[in-house]
Image 1 (cartoon, rainbow, N blue to C red):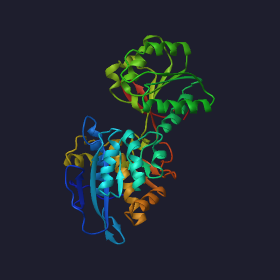
Image 2: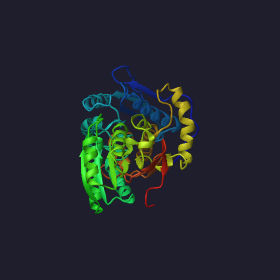
Image 3: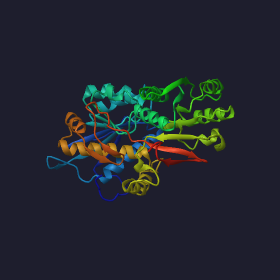
Length: 392
């Protein structure tokens, strides 16, 4: 990871932020210019994700030093487009950025708007570096113009299957909330377990907001698995596990990263959440006790910077770190390509060999990031604690 000096309390003077549709933005009078579009959730209930995205980008730019193309300093303009996390609004925000003639996009932040926006960016030949999307089909939709910092849902499925096997799972039940996130992971878990010769004795779908899990609990009792894999979010997972324990189910529970949230204790008491473990889609370098020196420095330097930017979320986390890496990948591509042209940057991104905050970066030809970066946690009392994966 390159060191870019100390943080300043304000954004670099050379950066101009223009909120699409709200603030007029002057065009730069001299080349070279790098106009970066930020598409994300910048309003509504989920706007905190947009603030993390914005913060990570601004922090990376503040640390980047001078960026030169052909010996000339590059002027940077940021153009914001708000899709509110909506798949329907994704193309509208994307077209705003195309009309603003951006060279590259950092975002979108969520998978739904990314899927609907990428055909527009692809047609306009604008590369998009997405900081934290995970849907499996995005690289296919992007057609070589989409580059992911996080990892696809299939990656979770691969690792969950490996862990279930390590937990002694000879017979496994898979449950999810029937939403795109959970069911996506469930398909991958089943595929990988079956390939490993593990018997998947049941695959069941609940629903987001479901409170009565008794029909599925009854099926789990009948199936008698050693391991139950739940893919979804913490509220449904907590209720399912509590009701299963109340009905005498002794199987171990293993969950996707959506269950690893302290909110699980608001729906189920800790004494009912026994033999529970889960994964997080973060590298071990982010885990307390094994955190890298780079991440520790990020945790120390980012909060005061974010406060100076008046962001709603100022703590360093995987989302701000993902946006930080997305920006540094882009800067690295511009420097290697010696161009701010979209095609040149896309070609440079495809040939990336870079170590960022979230680990090493190399991309497949379609823009998919190589490798899985997963951490494993066991529930101990009322907290999840980092642990070695079973069998390691």
